[in-house]
Amino acid sequence: MIDLNFVPDHDQKAIARYAMSIVARHLAIWFVFAIVVVALLLAWGKFFLERNLAIWEEQSILVAQRRASVSERIRLLNQTAIAVSKVQEEYRPWSELLMEFASIVPPGNRVDSLLIDNRTGMVEIRGFSTTRENVLAFEKALNDNPFFTEVKSPLTNLLNPKNIDFSFTAKLSFGDYESRDENL
Image 1 (cartoon, rainbow, N blue to C red):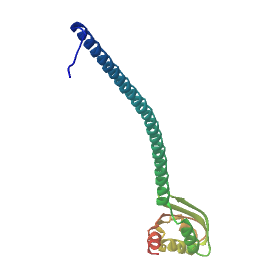
Image 2: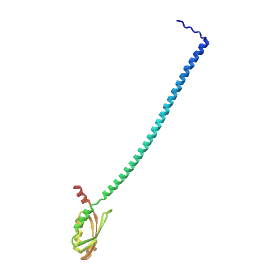
Image 3: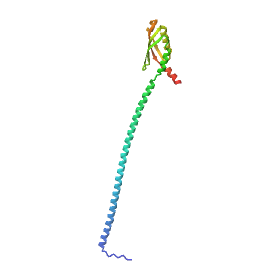
């Protein structure tokens, strides 16, 4: 079959240019549409990421605050544990000592004061005795007792034969008691 074209040449070229301009316009519209879609997707992605970033920042701040709070509580707990440890290190079996002390006071002696310096471990005992023999018996009982070391008795304790106001100084020793306690 034969193609017959009765349109003049210069009109054919104009029609071809018009057709090309329509195709170019459609391509440009599609290109602009694609750019708009990509721009919208990028804007949505930016919004989504900024929102998530804000949420993550809030969560990280909360975690940091919790961590600081926990750290503070741990620090306070450690301080309390150190204080308890110090108290435990300074613990002395006072009731055991006092019961032992009461049991070694010989008859005829009366203890008026018992002063204990916990820092130095020094003890000062003051009291009254009916006789010099009772004072010497008390001094011997103190020397024989494992709680007391370095027992010192001034000469004034021995000046009078009767009705003696006595005083002793000694150093406390809990070593025997603590080793006894560890063996239980």
